Length: 121
Image (tube, rainbow, N blue to C red; front, side):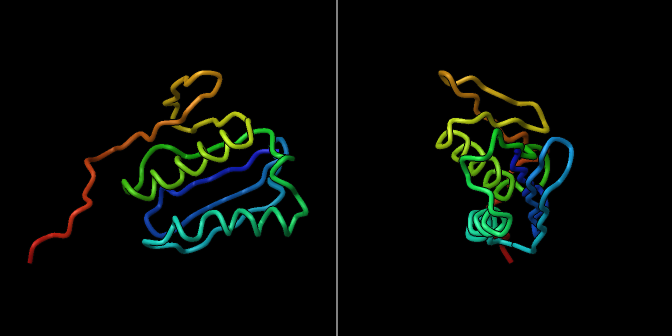
């Protein structure tokens, strides 16, 4: 089974569990400025509702191109951390993969410069 993570929208997160090409579970939720707080609990709840354990996952797929700087990084970092902890591969939709020992690490692909400071009035 595959865990799919997409945080490329600034206010929307999509997660899914896939069995081959079939989506077993899909969840989309609003998370403007709080993706980090909501992502892991949502993954945990979705897995629990479907009676799937983290150990049942074979790989993780993550959208790694586009979207806001911070929301993109949250999704990619979460996928990389889970993949590392579970010892399973992480694959990317945007294809920027770096080998790190026996693991592959997905890098975010930014389509614009980060804008992480408040604009002056």
